[in-house]
Every structure is written in C-alpha cells, then in structure tokens.
Amino acid sequence: MLDDVFETAGAAPTFDPALWKTLAELGLTRLTAPETGGGWAEAAVLLAAAGASAAPVPIAENDLLAGWLADSAGLDPAPTDAVRTVAVLGSDGVARHVPWARNADQLVLLWPSGHGWCVGQVTRGDVEFTEGANLAGEPRDRVTVDPATLSGVATPGTIARELHLRGALARALTMTGASARVLDIVVAHTTTRTQFGRPVAAFQAVQHLVADIATHDALGRAATEAAATAVLRHGFDSVTTEFAIAAARSCTGHAAATIVRNAHQAMGAIGFTAEHDLHRFTNRLLSWRGEYGSLRSWDDTLTSAAAVAGGDGLWELISG
Image (cartoon, rainbow, N blue to C red):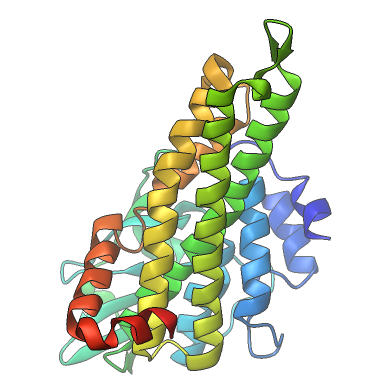
C-alpha cells in the first residue's frame, strides 16, 4: 500500500499537498496518536517508505515530534489534515533550521523557562519566517517569535532530551529507506548499462563499489531496527535506548558517506544530472545525517558510554 501511495510523490523537494491529503485520508499523518493505536514499529515502516520515495511531506515532524509533544502537554489536537512541525526556541525566541515551517498550519514550540521547559502552540501567522533549505532543497526555515507573547504549559526537564532522541531515530529510519533506494538505483544501472560489450556490473571495481553500498546499507538498517526495538522494550528514558539510537545514528551517518560516494562513482556523470533520481536521495542522506545531532556528537556519545562501561561492562552494553 505504501509503495502505491508514495509512487505519486512529487519529485520537487517542496511540500506536496496532494500526497499529504492522501496520507491524511489513510490515517497516516498521525499514525502514533493515542486514538490511532500505532507505535514505533508501524512508524518505522512508514518512515522507511517515505525515505525510499523522497516524499516531500513532514511525516515525522507532524506525528512523532510535534504531535507527540502537543499530546504530552495536553494541547488541543489539530485537524486531521493539518500540518504541524516542531521548533525549539532559544532564549531570544529564535529557532533555526526548522523543517517545513513555511508549510505548517501550526507550530508546536518548546522553549526554556525558569527551571524547565514550556510547550505552546501557535499558528503560522503568529511567527516570522526566513526561508532556508538543506542540501536537498527541503525547507529548513528560521522561525522568530517574540518571547513576551509566549504562553505555554510547563513540562518536565526530560522533555527536550526525548524530543532530540525521537528526532534522531526518525531521521535514521528515513535514511534507511533512502539508502536502500540508492542501492536499487545503482544495481539497476550497472546491470543494464554496458561498456566494452558487457554490463558495467561485470567489472570487478564496480562490483566492489556496489558491495560496499550493500554492506553499509545492511549495517545501518540493522542498527536502526535495533534502536526501534529498544524504544519498544525500554522507552526513551533508558540508557539502553540512548545507546542504541546513538549506534543507529553513527552507523547510518558513516554509511551515508560511503553510499553516496560509491553510488556516484558507479553511476558516472548521469548520477549528477538534475534529470536523474540519484541526487534526490544522496543529497537527502547527506542532509539528514546532520539533523538532530551531528555525526560527531553521536560518535562522542558512543565513546563516552564505552568509557563509562569499561572493559568489564562493554560487551553487555553492546549486546544489550
């Protein structure tokens, strides 16, 4: 079903209202809402499918981030077909690189206040936008709100950390779909394109490139599936879950570098053209790996956890 739904996705990185309407009618824009009954297992399938089609819609932001944050604070629910995103404000009332802000009907805001955090909800007309984009051309806007106008619900101090972990896992899941799609594109090209009277895939150097893509794709997917499983078993308030998400982000982040490099080498000049699909996925991989924590920050998290565990506890940390 998801393959059929996302087959209609527009190729441009700008918001696709027709696709969003279809997803809303199918109940997929708020898949994990309490009344829907879905969870991270179902969301993992949806996000991977969205990544595999480069779907230009804010599925993770609307459901797993803004929707969850609004529900946890007891804010009013949004209409079924509404678009929501989340913005974390600084003390100056500014949030940077906010995904899909210009397309959102409502923005769920999180900002520091006193000894904790506050959550509030505003409409698009209540904030100022400066449009921006990531490497793939997806909207990543600067949002400015007058702090004096904000009113919200006080929330526990752990809310910001869970939002960060949720966003990190959502990006990792979407990256697995995109990397699998890159592998499919490269395999299809190298097995049908001929040079010197035989398929490009017959050359050993190309075989090595494709094998490395497949290896890193499998590693990233396995680590991300393990992280989603950790969430289902332990929730987000767990050292085990944080370590698993850090491992997933590290694996998918390092995999992205190899997958993108090898894919463009195997495809040659055609992979760089605007008319070909490859760049839609490789540019997204390079963009997504730096969102909700840089690759370096997740590597540092793994290193710190290993150092704390020590020689006696390292295997138990890795094996869970």
